[in-house]
Image (tube, rainbow, N blue to C red; front, side, top):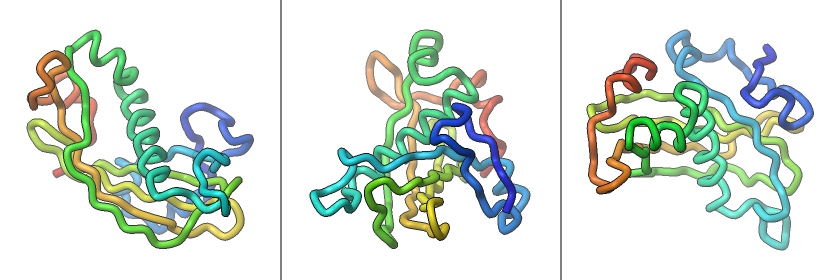
Length: 165
């Protein structure tokens, strides 16, 4: 196990650990990690995470990834007049997360098109035994902030994206 620093410093009071040695070089180069703690608001009365909470966890990870390469959605909207929105989502739930679990969301850009990016996102429990809880394939599209119509990703952004197919 190696220790990976995450954006936001000591967000959960410790750095998330990852099994990086199991990943290919290409996957490591394009992977972004974001730590998440499960709060009461994320769960039902039995302490099990709602299925929609995983969507919020993944959205936060993609948003923070974007913040690392270009300063976030607000800056991109103000500077370039664009937004990124989810176009398609496929998700598989494997195991439940529960109240107070420490999670890690891995986001890997594995496809890039003229107007969009495809992410592979996985949510892992890192408190206790590390275990994958769910995974999703998320396609986001670049849209014009005024018209909400698809628009090509500006070259200034494309230059900062991972070179993936």
